[in-house]
Image (tube, rainbow, N blue to C red):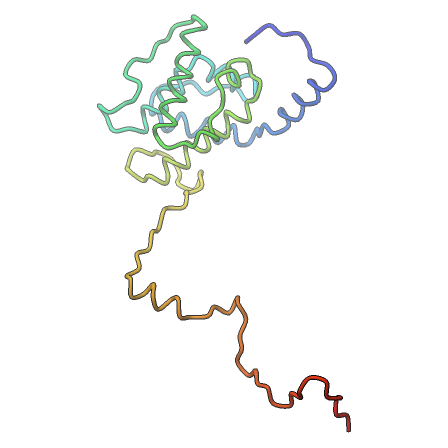
Length: 199
């Protein structure tokens, strides 16, 4: 973590709003999933944002997680370093982020390295892990371990093909959104300039 002094004013307000988005219950679910998914002897961290950050900060757990979502021999990160040097750890976080994007996580769902490394936005880290779990559940390729109900299944593309004949028939149909002229007639209409006949 960077040695930063306390923030004041608007910076402090913004940081407090970001910190309010962090979900402790979600943290427990994500920790359980990561440990189950990696299927290794990964130590369960104590509860709390700071412990969650410290657990993920070196990047080894994240790299093991993304590797476990691929079949054996196809892992995107072949060498995971246990180095204590800051730049190596940040490099591993970056490797995880690139691998997650290749796996199918949208760029807008991916956190920045400093969000985890400096603890600036741990809620963004949670969102990335949630998005990764959702993609893994959706792929359903046998590599996901855990309860399928832990993550939302993403909608699948359902392209429809219409023949030229069907498209032509569709042009002749007036949709109800455009209104209807059924029951309309000119009965009782009088010519312009004629007074209304009231009886």
